Length: 94
Image (cartoon, rainbow, N blue to C red; front, side):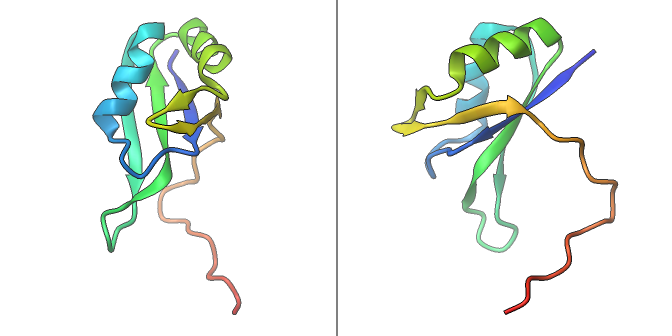
């Protein structure tokens, strides 16, 4: 069973490839993606890493949470359940 992790506090310069390389030391990574803004293409400062093995994911959380990646201390924890496709948050009130 695969396990998806949320990685927050990423540096603007961190790429999906860099994220993948930082986490492969804990086990097989099936996907690593830095989330970018649709309009600007700039990093939104967070991403997701998916491991094939739950034990590898637990090890990555224990070792990487609070560690520095590309000059920034990152947060690593289990990702929340994904929202069903097509559902978006309502716009913020101004």
